[in-house]
Length: 251
Image (cartoon, helix red, strand yellow):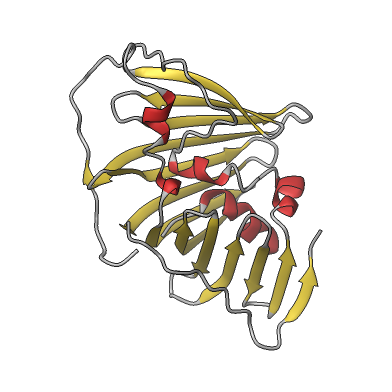
């Protein structure tokens, strides 16, 4: 269960006060080749602000084993995430808190709490906190880039580095959202591919309704379908540890 929950972190980071079912966003075809900048795209990143996903349906498949669960996530713009994983029947199986320096995981099945830092995810599974916004189609750059985004037939291929990983973005220039991401490490043959689709809008916010994540080394796949999402300010994120849980430090 710990491995399944941890791998699912690559695909779970969502969270507000009125529930919406977003409408499909449609924009007329346009050539942005001479007017679209990297800042134009980055300012629409979902993780720039607070948001909530009340319900996301998740399917995890690895080597013939399939797990179906429900997730809800609260996100604050200062890189804090609170994720709840539940069975289809509504029973919570895990609660996860992630910040820039803390990783906490309540395993409600085995009555254990795992404590560590986000570096554990990167070292063991290749998932860094800096890379988590990629799940939402956010464009992440390590340095400021002044040059314009060059689009051809409504798309642009953008290369960047996130830590030690080389990342390739496929950008939809009309929606100003990333529709495909490929991440690889220079030290391994393991690749993570993220496909984003069924984009919907609430006000100025555009988010992917469907997210599919595949990992080449373990041949695992995660499919996420966002059902209910909100965009509202969150005062605080509190992680309440389980009472009398066994504490396990992960390194």
